[in-house]
Image 1 (cartoon, one colour):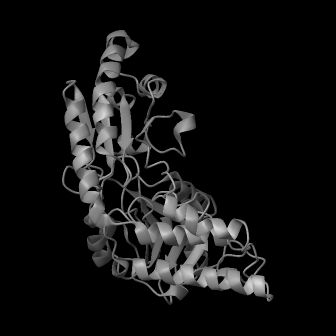
Image 2 (spheres, rainbow, N blue to C red):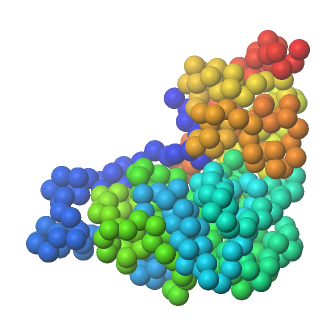
Length: 375
């Protein structure tokens, strides 16, 4: 298998597996229990919190562990909105956010919040000026992702911070942490996830700047500084800390070279359009449209040949609807339905990319000859 769908999820590193396994077997205590087993679990939990905070550049008390990026995004947006409701009723986000952001915002909109969804340009980038123009005296929250999960565009978060200093700024950094540098000075709330950087599924976190108003959305316990009730997933959190400790944005230089090698191999087909910014982009995502090749047919044919790719966000792939990201970028419908996302990781190898270059063009070329898209 040649796995090139790492933006959907990644393989757990052996070191991460070794870090979490003790808490599935011998050290299975509840971190809220007072007995020795519980105290050991609590020490492991707080040790992991300190390691995560150190890697992000924050304080351990600013880390709230969750079940993953989807929950973190909901907590950040709905929690900040609830806490700030007395100050205003307006939110700002972009048209290319992950569904977990867009649907949380849409739910708030149905509850009476006013929402502005700022556009992006043809490279999938938000103009900080558009954010500035959207702000009103009633704006309390801006949520703009750091790296887009479908096309890899790297948003100008620092510039957005400069125009949005008077509001709470949240960023979904699930595709950024461990891959590109992130600066906590630019935001108030930051989402991260373990399984995007070779950690286990079902665990993630939200960094909350000290003093940022945030109302708990999960209640019924005092865990996570009373911001997220529920028994902590100590094993998963230990795995998250190990994965983040091992992650290296510097290693992504090698990944970027592999991405470019794959791009060059695909462009030999002709009729290949690469989406996303050529300059401001994450190193691990390559989204292309191959003219005359339906993306669903391509995904299935490549899967049969042992190559795993996707057409965009794994969270929305079952619907097979046109990509809202490509639509927002102004990509014509006939090209949007031909898009394929290849995504790499720190564990991607030269051999995998060479294998993909030898397999993928031939399959796509054959599909182009028989596809109804070309008729």
